Amino acid sequence: MGLADTYIHVPVLAGKVAEMLVWNKSGVYVDGTIGGGGHARAILDRLDESGRLIGLDRDPEAVSVSRARIAGGGDPRAKVMHREFTELASVLDTERVSRVDGVLLDLGVSSHQIDTPGRGFSFQAEGPLDMRMDRGAPYTAADIVNGSTRDEIERIIREYGEERQARSVANAIVRTRAEAPLTSTGRLAETIRSAVRRRWATKSCARVFQAFRIAVNKELDRLKTALDTVLPLLSNRGRFGVISYHSLEDRMVKRTFETWASDCICPPGLPQCVCRHERVAVLHTKRPVVASREEVTANPRARSARFRMIERLPNDDPIS
Image (cartoon, rainbow, N blue to C red):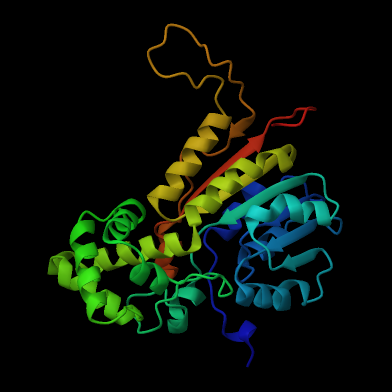
C-alpha cells in the first residue's frame, strides 16, 4: 500500500469553490496548495479538454500523492510541482503562462498532516516537536520553543495564537526547557496545561500549537506575499479565492479584498476623497462562504473554514 492509498484528506467546500472559481472552461487555473488533490479534482471536472491546472505544494508528501492521483493518473491537463505558492510568478514564467484565469489557496493543515504523529502538528498525539509543512525547511517548532527568548515566545503565542494566557504559558515553557529541551508534542502539551486553568486547557493547547505552527512555517508572511503577488497574474475577469481557518488569515484576506474592490480607502470622517484609489476587482463574497451543516457533520474540521473570492476587473493595463 503506497502513500496515495493512506493519504486521507477531505477537501472543504470543494464543489462550491470549483463552481465559483471556474468561469472559463478552457482556462488555466492554479491550485497553490494542492494537498491531496481534492480541490484540484473538482476544478478539473469543470474544465474542458483545453483547460489546464497547475498544482503547487510545499509538502513533498502532498506533491507525491497528487501526482499519483491526478497527473500520474493520466490527466494531461494537470501538472503538479513541489513549489511554494509564493513562487507563482516564477512558476508561470517557467511554464510560459502570462496570465491565469483562477487561483485557489487552501490555507489549512491537511488531515493527513494532523493525523500523522511524526509530523508533530497535533497536541493530542505523541510525536516530535516538528510542525514543518516542508520537512526540508531548516527550523522546527522545537528550535523556536527552545531557542527563543521568553518575550519572543510570549509574542508568538499572543499574536499568532491569540491566547490570553500567553505570558503564563511562555513562563512555563522557559521553566520546563531549563530542566531539559522540549522536543516532543506531549511534553509541550503538558507544559501548556500546567500554566492554564483546567477548563481552558484544550483550547489553550490548540491555540499555542497553532501559534508555533504559524511561526515555523511563516504562514502569515507567505499569505501577505501571495496577496501582493497574485492579482497582477490574473487575466481580465480572473478569479482569486482563499479558504482560511483562523481569524488572523481571514482578516488579512478580507481587508485586502475589500481594498481591491473599493473606490475610496480614505479614513472615515474626511469631507471628500483624497486617496485617488480606484477599485481593481469585484468582491464575489461580501460574506464568507462557510460549510453547510451536513459538511461539518461529515468533516468537523470544516467548521472553521471561510472562503472569500474576488474577480479582477477587465483592464488592458497591467495592475501594479
